[in-house]
Image 1: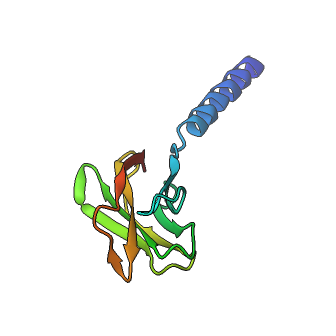
Image 2 (image 1 turned 120 degrees about the horizontal axis):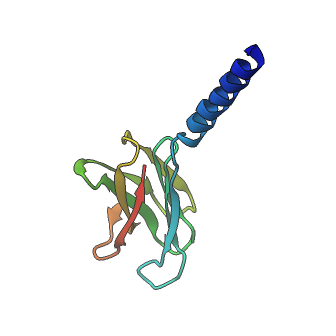
Length: 131
C-alpha cells in the first residue's frame, strides 16, 4: 500500500516539476540590418534582446560618415519608448534598457545620423518582437 502511494506521489511530483519547467518565460530576440543613406548594405544594426529588455544600435560601417540610432516603443503603450544612439562614425554600439511586461509587443526602427542629428528619411520601417 505504501509503495503504491509513494509511487503515485513521486509521479505527481514529476508532473508538477515538468509543468513548472514548461511554464518558464518565453524569450524573443531579433537582429536586423539596414543600408545607410548612400545605399551601402548592412551599415546599421538594430537589435532587441527580450531578457532584460535591451535595445541595441550599432554602427556596422565605420568611416561611412553615419552614426546609427534605434528608436523603440511598446506597441500597446507608445509612451513607453526610447532610443539607443551610436553617435558618430566610429563603429560603436549603444544600448537602451527598457521596462516592458512579458509578452508585450515592441517595435523598433533603425535610423542614421550625421553630425549629431537624425538624417531625414533615413529610418527603415518598423521591426516587431515580444518582450
